[in-house]
Amino acid sequence: MIILFLNKYLIVKQKIFDYLFYFFRGIGRLYIKYFFDCCPASYPYITGDGFRKLADHIYDNKNKYIAVEEVKENNIVFVGIESVEDFFNQIHPQIKNRYTLITHNGDIGISQMLANKIDDKIIKWYAQNVEIKHQKLIPMPIGLENKHYYNNGIPCLYNKIRKKTVSKNSRILFGFSVSTNIEERQQAYDYLTTNSLTDKINLKINPWTYLNILNKYNFVASPPGNGIDCHRTWEAIYLGVVPIVKRSIMTEYFYKLGLPLWIIDDWNELNNLNENDLLIKYREFESRFDSPAIFMEYWKKKISFARY
View 1 (cartoon, rainbow, N blue to C red):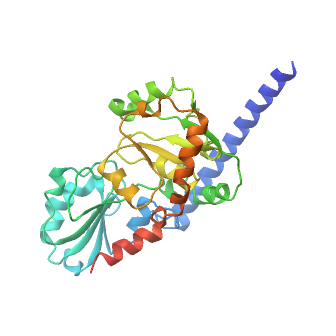
View 2 (view 1 turned 180 degrees about the vertical axis):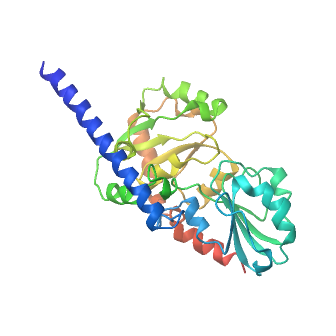
View 3 (view 1 turned 120 degrees about the vertical axis):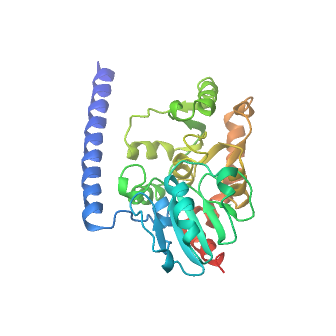
């Protein structure tokens, strides 16, 4: 009887907390919309809108115009990735000076077909979801969800949780929508649901609850979704959790920058491990949480210096 009562109490408590979170989320969205610009950065955390703030010129779904004659030598041009084809077809040919290109805020990967657009006018191209190697093409993190959604990427939530001292589980947390990438995620899901070292999380919980649960783990599974990079990877890194990711040009590049990524080729690589093995593995990554590449300031300097 007591256990039943406690279960009902916890369910009601969670529903009340969910209601309060989504209520204040609505207030937050309105506050940003009417008292800030449409795309605020989330400094010191990495976001697409943080990169957008670095630009001298912007071309995306919120701003479909660039005065091409005002693009000066060494300027930075930000292009929303969903608009990149239009940009290369209509805007880029009219630009006379050399510039640095940033593409972000979308899931389209940078394939060889897009890389073929690179010419002498592009000094460097910093891009999310880079799929190929090119001397001018630099992989760039997806980071957290943009602040203006006021949902999964609320900076103050990360600030608060990062200050907590918790005892982490030497286990692997997982929970993701398979439908965003059936080829990759179905395989990951099938494996993770049968592994004794994994814990599945309810996808319907609010972000505050999710982040507090995530903060108690050493590892989280982060298979590719709509794009190669996932917000989940960066949510984890900011909370001292090691994301387990598939090998790609992008993840290998980030690893070389010192990021705490456990790169695998196949989920079966997690076979025959126990919690002590995971604890030892986690200790291998601990120093990597000090990498400056985790934060926006590193990328701001990298992009600025590369212009000249």
